[in-house]
View 1 (cartoon, rainbow, N blue to C red):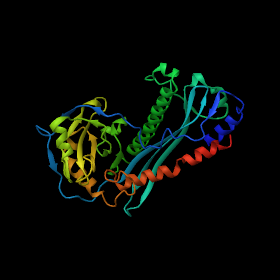
View 2 (view 1 turned 120 degrees about the vertical axis):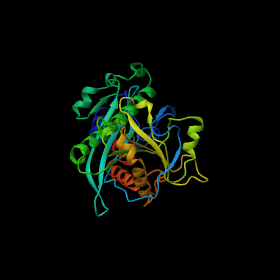
View 3 (view 1 turned 30 degrees about the vertical axis):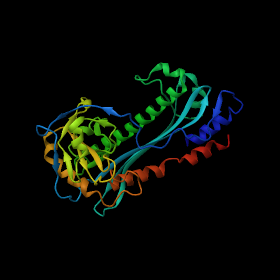
View 4 (view 1 turned 180 degrees about the vertical axis):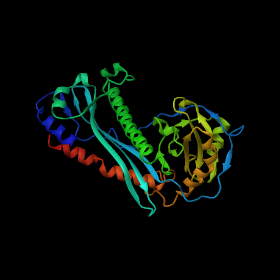
Length: 333
């Protein structure tokens, strides 16, 4: 694997003063998605004249048959002079729930790379050691002046790893559409469906967003969302920041937040921007309420996570190299 090949490469440069190995890194962590800064955005209401709370009715058996999630794991391994070299592992999986209620792997994909500013490092030696590298400065959106600051290069690497995870999730979503999109099944995607080229338009692809870094409403309207009760959803709206991949969205409270944070049990749902979606909003919401059992414990986000998504995460964590494994791979250098 890449880490073993990289360890051998670094052994060949043991006496090179440019190399500074970081055998124990505590500056980063495993994540399912990259952290995002809090953002105030806007939205266009597509249901009703004003934002309100709607009771979706009694929870019912879920019609979701497939579940998609991704993971990224990254760690600073060493510096080549002042250039940070970041290991990144990304993976995604679609798990299928069949008639026996057991979970099976529909498809999965994973990859690992070394993320760095290639113009400042020994790319020839790395490629010769069969190590796949990703030039973080090659991205058209990358600020080329970042090359002068190691911490800015670390941030570029973090963003690049996240983009690779999104690409894998998108590829699996497209594969599901090709293989099973006409079978009558439903795909629940843990995260925004707007990163999918075609998935965001598919009538049976639903996204669930557990974090609320982006607020689409302010003031009294946002207060109405925070005050949603269990089994209530918000009016349907269209996030305005998604012009290229328009979707319909709404909030739903899965669990009571009495005595808890205002976000406790609150999720945001995305679906295709179509008249058909408006007809299934309550049905999809009832399905998600029906997915609350079994609880996704012991995950700390159990109030916003359904069990099949936790199953996906457990699968992904099982195939990802642990931090202990990463440190052990470099321990002999």
